[in-house]
Length: 217
Ligand SMILES: O=C(O)c1ccccc1N[C@@H]1O[C@H](COP(=O)(O)O)[C@@H](O)[C@H]1O
Image (cartoon, rainbow, N blue to C red; front, side, top):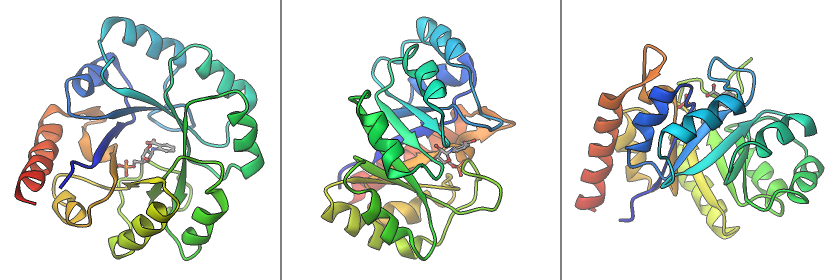
């Protein structure tokens, strides 16, 4: 089995960045939306001068951003992927694509119409992040959704030739089950935190589980 793509999200300090820069993550994510994990682009730029994260792709997570908010981030940071985690319209994303030549992912919240939404966005995105749907919180909830739906999401994404990450409450205790479903990618934030900081210990446990799975299958 191929190792699923791994994304660690919600880096909020230089210390967090050091930890994930040394990890097996393929992608590291920064939150530029209203959240306890929100970071300022200028600060991230300073951290990136100190910490070598050049082996990782950088993901900027936005929730319904204005053009100015996008510009503030994209003009300062070498972003590889934009992750739209709100209810951005297709025309909003098309507008961004006119200027941004990198990868675009759309986060969709698990609910009965998610499959229809995957279809709606398929012509403007390169991939999906499927996350839990919670009242009053766009993401970073630490809550997982019913993973019985994951095979269906993966199948649809594969048909559309898109990558599909599974997010929401993934942690060292439940990642074994998720790995059996062979997701294209796994996206974690709360599950690699302890006292609001990224935890080397939790990351080590996650990566041991992943390695064991890849070796066994
Ligand atoms: O992490 C946040 O604070 C956040 C805020 C607003 C939108 C998205 C956010 N994070 C995304 O949520 C999932 C991770 O969730 P979890 O903490 O592991 O349950 C991931 O896609 C993040 O990019």
